[in-house]
Length: 157
Image (tube, rainbow, N blue to C red; front, side, top):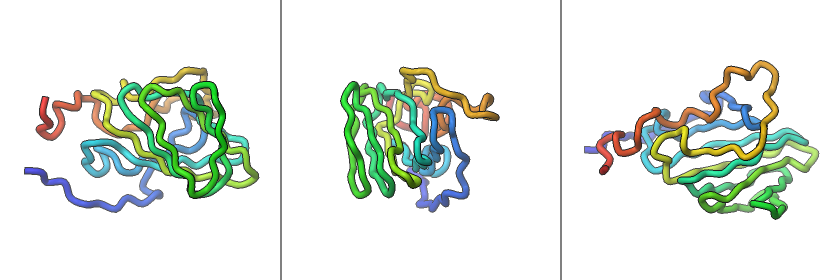
């Protein structure tokens, strides 16, 4: 029987992950709320900041721009994104985000399904600038324990 209960997570309860640029906050995850199909968070980018290019071999990514002007590179094509626009990024598509405006940009993201293990869910395709003091950051946000997905919560194998 599933014992997962609804839980509200406040942004202040999350830790920033700056390993790939910007301030990435994973909020609703298997670790924080017991989700089993994906995870959700918020990306906060200051003017001129970017999230380095990467792709997800197991997950689609859904994004919704809340505020700010952004550009996204999808494989080798650039698109403008503005508030109240959403985008679905298919599995294996390389992507990178930039804040091209003069104000903070905020973008909600959701990825699903989960990769079999968190370390397999994200592949960097370009070097990242390591912000000062972040040398010990994990290479990806902690969204689930490092166990196979089928081993979690009685999921079917």
